[in-house]
Image 1: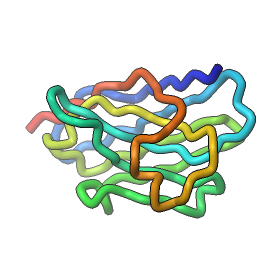
Image 2: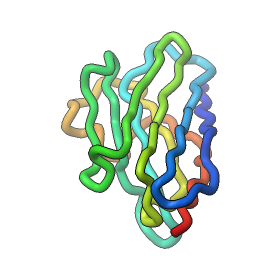
Image 3: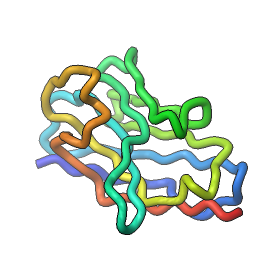
Length: 126
């Protein structure tokens, strides 16, 4: 069994920054692609960013391009999301996800990941 634990969420003013972390533990054979999604009440979970196994591949939602950066440290089984120039519309619960299989890179923005964290709240005040 694999567990994902997010941290780093909180309250920040518009224009500020936060860095989210997600640590994986348990029976991890290979850390395949990882991603961040976010969700606000009453809406579907939304893709934010994804990173491939070797970190050579990254993908971002248009709404966060140029502001957010996804990275990973495989030795620590950890993925990060650096969020800069935060806006009130970035307010959401942020979830990290881990693939337990290889998938085409073009599909990494779909929520078909095998493991999910419990989420961390990010609130951006105006």
